[in-house]
Length: 350
Image (cartoon, rainbow, N blue to C red; front, side, top):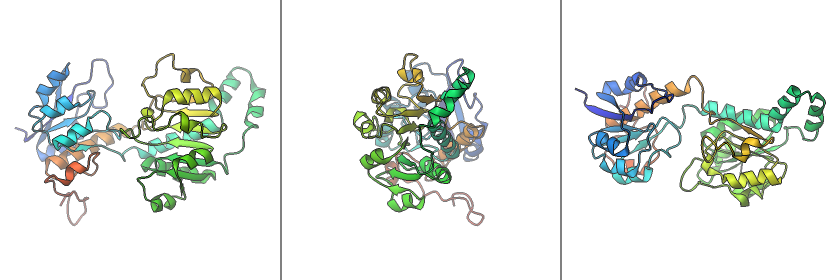
């Protein structure tokens, strides 16, 4: 009999799931600590609450882990996410209950950085418009259009938030000869300048940047962080890129900015509502390039994030401090031992 019970919501019928009911990748770490994953087909929150009452851990998957669920999960020691964002869990309720919530913020950074750089280049060079011109027999219109814009070399790229993704983008963008700015009140200036990026305030960044790339995580503090007042500060020739989280931007204000010419163009992988409504004006704009929240996607992303989530849950179940946690304050008053990286001399978690 397994020592620990890990509960996961069964996906709705007809949906595509990275695990598909097979948790072999998670079990690479969970098996050795005596845990088993139980997939439950709860159709209602009440049914899921019954399923997690005796659970030692919960995998956040397909169902939002709400306060009522957390309040009834009296045996739960950890809630695991295989994503960067934690908006599918009521983190405040988990913290109040003394439950750490783990995430995987560093398993697909390179993919998102690549996608961001692609969005910057494609938007700056008006790729989709150029493609359409060729297909529609408007060959002669391409060069005059691009001749209106300066070369990318020497332009200013501003990062709103300077976490892992923005830093990886900065490494890539340096080769294109752009000057870089960053606003992040939670990151030391020395960390920012280490990447050849100038730390500035948000207002200065918006006013100086030719391209603004949004990377803020979705938190109570950052919801609609950028709104009308911020878009009005930007240059009318500026581009706006968002591969972070849709709700960090007031989408109505962004639409207005693009329609009325406060901004020149945008590249978006995320939206306030996903998928966006068919009548969303962004879908009809020639000056907007869109992708369906796929910046992190690659053949490596799903298996590695599943393995990492299993590792995080296993660390907590074995009494150790997880590598990454979205509510670290809960760990400060816990009895978890500090996690230490594997080494040949010490062994795992020694």
